[in-house]
Amino acid sequence: MATDHDLRASAPRATSLHDFTATTIGGEQQSLAAYDGQLLLVVNTASRCLFTPQLKDLEQLHRRFHHRGFSVLGFPSDQFHQEPEEDEQIEELCTDRFEASFPLFSKVMVNGAEADPLWSWLQTQKGGLIGGRISWNFTKFLVSPSGQVLRRYAPPVPPTRIARRIEQELAGREDRSR
Image (cartoon, rainbow, N blue to C red; front, top):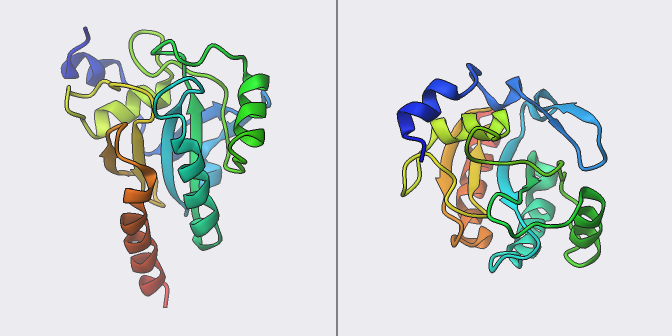
């Protein structure tokens, strides 16, 4: 098991989420700098998990706050053996069953030597109950418009409980822009 020191040593030398690129669920490379200026909730998802119903709540947050500069970014992962589907089936499930309109990315690993660089970096920014490692599906990171991790939420925390914090962050940003 990697220690927090190991995670820091292997994490990319990025200074913000905007320094990364990711592969969309459609297979296109996308710079996450495209989200500069937006408040983000970055989540590792899975279609066969106890927490999979959170996809519906994530979509509700996305729809409620998107017009104010907020977005959910979903990263499917089979790290915990609960996402056996390929990207095409994942996208179909998320859009058909959960009506997800938020951006989805290609399946990634979130821990270990095979971890996606973004997820290695996220782990070094805000630790969880067991250190930096991602403990399970639906770990959530609230990321500022400048790309800094504000808060990490454990998998059981329902997205609806994060709505107040999102509202506060967006209201503070709107006040500063007046």
